[in-house]
Length: 492
Image (tube, rainbow, N blue to C red; front, side, top):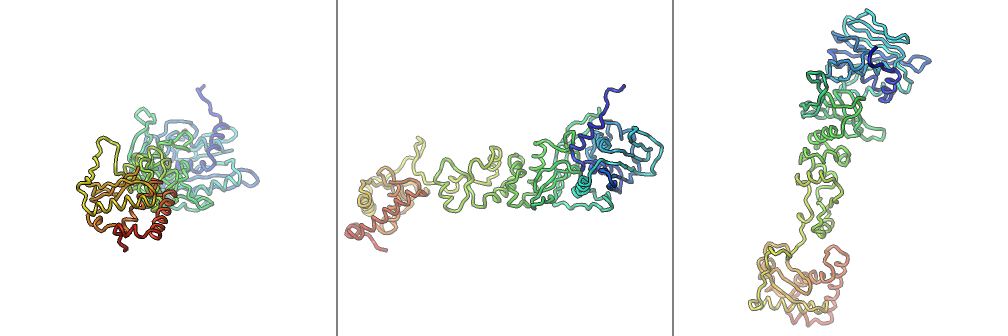
């Protein structure tokens, strides 16, 4: 008595769980793994019964090397040592047989028939190739689905493959490239072990769903493995590490395929695909190319984009006002953000348009260099008097005025806070002060005095302060024009 017995009914449940398209895929891939040049599949309904005849023929010169493999589950597969052949478990034919009411295989080594009475081995042979003929439990709708699933196959160009007399057309890839991917190969003792191996990968346009959206699949040498929902079909030209049902891969493997695909295909990425699961998963991988990250972010957020900067909140708001898209912190995972930063695809708002920060609390900060009042020129003193008097007229506040040197490269002309107004003397230049009070001076002073009410340039409170101060300046000019004349105000 052997250790195990297999339940045909149990195997049938496993096969049907995978879907009857598996019947077609399994039989075709067995032929493709041989030296065949022609493979023919015929699927026909049996009148009056929920059955179909399925016949698969090939012209492989050798045929079945061991006919017993047709009924021996998990026998040592010759194909598991070759990463460029699809089989490894020697289970597929048995799952196909499990859903058959009867079946027969004829090959160069003999024939075997399966029926209600069991298994019958005979001497009938073919000169070359093998023929599988089975009566499969299949409804008409299931038969239609199986035939239509043939359109998902990617037949090798050197093997003519037909289904019900119609040749499967080879698909032209959008791109092919080489990369290193995990695969499964039998070691010296016959055990399947994982190996990293260079292989060809081909990328095709994905088939479209009814609503017109692409729905991609992952392929193992032309045979669909599992749907990915991605924008492309991706064919790996070696064994793909799959589960026992051969209908799923690990998350890490799929992410590896996706990142290598994005690295090669980013220039063909469509804007609507940039937020897809595949692309976003690839962004989290440290192997993603900086050029790919750049394209993805451009599709998602446009050319004018910035990363939200918590250290410069005003810069975020100012960039939005200038038409930028500020990317929020939660838009990407930690790993994706690391790749975005390293690629330079997006910069923080404070780096693109830093808010002027004249002074720092740091003990290492450069100390302000004010021009002593004893060194003020008549033009500087006239400007200080005007600014102080103008502040009192507009705000009824006493303002102390300073003039700072050594800030030529700083991006601010003046700053105001806590009753202190400071002019950036070097940046404004000597001539600016010598021209005296005028429109440009009022514009700068009104802007700075508005900060007495609101620090945020983009706040509605700031704009309200600007409006109020501008209106008060108008009132002052109409009610007390001598104020401006006294300070030598020049009308421009």
